Figure 1 (spheres, each protein chain N blue to C red):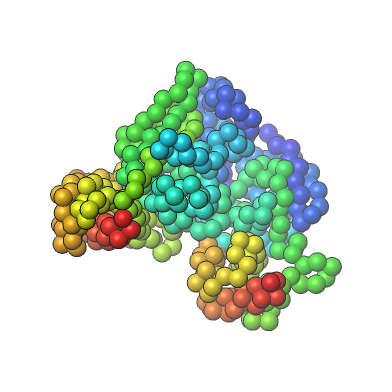
Figure 2 (cartoon, one colour):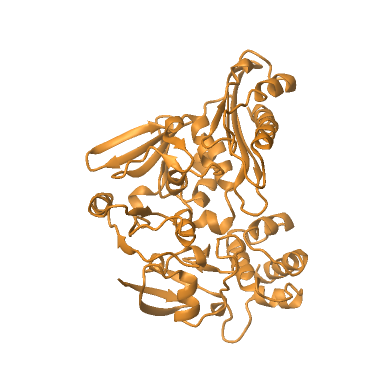
Length: 155
Length: 282
C-alpha cells in the first residue's frame, strides 16, 4: 500500500505517495533530493539526520514519512535566505565548527531548535542541547563557540 | 535500515483506534514511534499493521484536579519535563522525563509509548511506581485502571491487553513537606538508565513520616526498596545508607556493559544519593 502525504518542506508544498515504511530521512534524501540530512547510526543516537518538524528538532531516521503528513519540515537546505548564510551556518564557518562536516547539518538544526527555546544559552546548556548530536572528528569546543557566535548574531 | 513492510492506518479517534485494533490481528499502536520504530528497524517487531494514534489530541496534555495530576498518554517527554503543573505537584516525574535520551528524542517520545514498551532502562517506570500512579486503559468493553506497581509485569511486558489503548496516567500530587528526586547512572552511548533511582521523603517537625525508593535498571521491572526504617528518624546519612542497602532482587539483569551484581551495587549507591537529595528538598 501507499500513503498519500502533503507537507511543506523548506517552505514549499510537497505532495507524494509513500510506502508506509518509508522513513522521513529517506523521503527527504531520495525522493526530494535533499541530502543535507545525513544517515549515520540509524538508531536515533547520532543526530546526523536531525531536521525540524513543526519547529521541533527530531531525528528523521526515527519517524515515518507518513507521520509527517501535514507538517512543516525544515532541513539544512532551508536555512540560508536569498543566498545569505544563516547565522548558525556562518558561525560554524567562522569558528571552524566542523572538520568532515557529516554531523554539521544535524548540529545546526539542533542548535537552531536550542536557540529558539533559549536565545542566550550558557556553554553547559549548549552542550546539553546538542547531547543528541555526535561529532566523531574532533570534539565539541568549536561547535559550542559556533553556537555562541550565532546566538550573539541573532540576539 | 528500514522496517519490514506493513499496512498503515491512521486513527481519528480513540474509538476508531479501538475498532482498528479489533479488525487487525497483531496490529501495533504507534504514538511517537520512538520505541516501536527502532524495534521495527531491527526487525525485532514486524507488525502487519501499524495504527497511528499520534494525532489523537484527546490523549495529550497535563492537568491537575483533586490532588492528582493527569498526564495523557500522548504527552511528550519534552512537555512533561517543561510542565509547570508537574513542577508544582510531581517534580520528580518532570525531572525523570528531562533525563530521557536527548532533546530530539524527548520531542517525539511519549509517556504512553514509553511505559507500554516497558524497557527496564527507562526512566519513567520507577517514578510512576514510587508515586503510586495509576495507568488507565480503554477497550471496547470499557475502561479500567491498574496500579503502576502491577502494570509492569516483566521485561518489555505490561498489563495492556491486545484490545486496549493506554489513555492516561493519574499521578497523586506530592504533599507539603515532601521532597523527591530522580538520579540516573546513564549508559554513555544509548542514554538509557543503567540504574535510575527515584526517591521521596516526607518530613514533619524534623522527623521522617514517610519514605519511598524505587530503582530501575536492576531488575526486569522497577524494584521497590523497603525503606520504612527511615520513618521516625531524622534522615541522617547513616540511616539513609542503611535503608538504601536493602535493595535486593532475585534475578538482576546484566549485559556486556554492567553485570547484575554491579547494577545492584550501583543501585544502592544511587538509591542513597536519591534519598539524600529528596531529604534536602523536603
